[in-house]
Image (cartoon, rainbow, N blue to C red; front, side):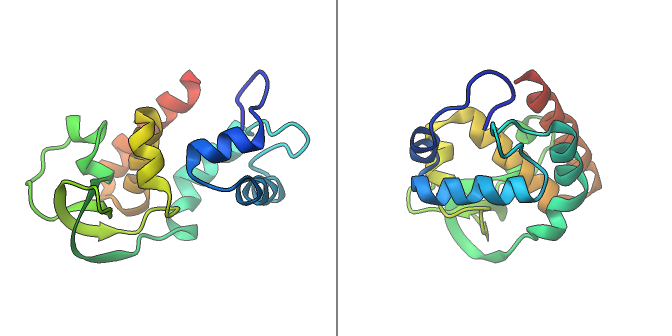
Length: 156
């Protein structure tokens, strides 16, 4: 994927995300079919992505909640939203993860490799946490998440 410049090889991006190259390639093909990415050069169609993230994501990928578990904070309990929203330390949303240090209610991540990839890349962690807030947040959380996500997308 790219906003500008050269796209990284499939194998490199896939490894960073904890996916196989074929899995990443298939995902890019699906994004192209959905009109979110230019299939020829993998350039992100920012307007379409913005519209999908803000208006379609929570319907296409609704949050699947689990019980109490150890995991990695997400949504409003993770940066950057945790800087704007005060919350109790119990029953926060977490991605179930054996390496997680927080107790909360389990939220199935968009992809099983999300926690591992987020641990390696703080910027990706922020983006995924903001996306989870768009998927499951209350109105105020969703609005702040939208603003913060758009800032980060347009900075790239």
